[in-house]
Image 1 (tube, helix red, strand yellow):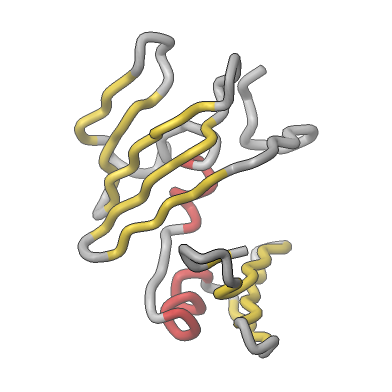
Image 2: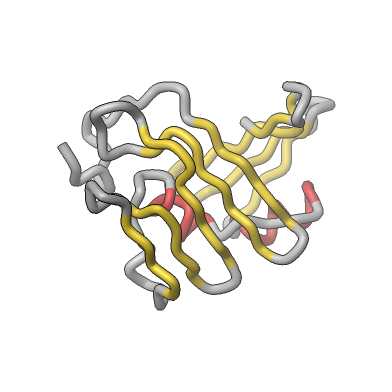
Length: 129
């Protein structure tokens, strides 16, 4: 789900079997096979989902070149740049390799992602234990 800074819901994004859907705040459902195109159409901006699935678990996207990679004292990513996106990991979950707060910036678009709870069973991208 995407929220405003005041906690209001902007949209709910679903990905299942390479099909993407977005439900906007009025409850209207939009579907497409391209997440980036759908987000641009419905929200007016887009996030690279291919990169995001890696960035959310504190990894680089192996399909993109990496610039300005900075690691913290525990070897976790502190910040990096991939494509048009600058990614900063501002907080990690205590005693964990998983991020808690992530900041994504591309041009004038700035997103703050806060992850309250990690459930990593059978998640094919979660290689960390």
